[in-house]
Image 1 (cartoon, rainbow, N blue to C red):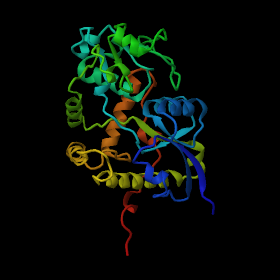
Image 2: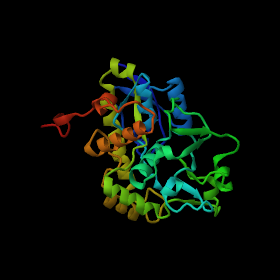
Image 3: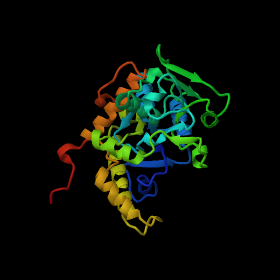
Length: 326
């Protein structure tokens, strides 16, 4: 029987490479990996053209797409996570000392929908007293999944000059960025992080909430899971095996050209546990996904929250998993 041939668009992550390179196989599936795109292009092509059979997708955009009737489902595989406190930047001359200082101000962001921006708007509101509707959000490009902003949500597209320049010049006092702004990388003293000791702030956030923020989910065309219901579970099993091989590789200090890689790894184990990229609808992941879905709803991008069982394929093997009897 020929294998089912499917395209998969995702980042070229270490946790995926064993599957991409053939060290791991997904039973019954031949995967064609498309890892040459950045997330912006990949997410746009999925949302606007539905080009890929399987695709790593912005978690917020996925919730919005499902509400709008896109023919997608998802498996509980989360290839990209990132703490985001370190991605809030301020103009050092703007007098911003704490998040509440941004009430009534403008905050830039490439667009409204990046997962990191959704997370930080929610966190700033829930934990730091900065209501997202007290801010004017300045964007420079369209959304991957268009939505109608509700009354009271102030989003203004301004393409008069790049957001990085707006931040440096003081046109906007702050920016939530999916990546590190170029002026900051170059050492421009007019740009700084809002949370200077961001790593400790992120560790404290994790210790308080148990959340290592999920940025992306793994989507599949619904027509595939409807016709081949075994695909979802076989994919999750293969991606889990691939991830475990990546963990073993990074634990070998000869593999990574970093002098203190073992120290960094042991620090991560102590802080986040042995499997921070945990897959499945586990209690930790449920809290993570329920929180980000709540933020997407609060920020006016979906009309209601939905049970996770409606949004993710059931790939839990229950007591059928584990070692075989002999």
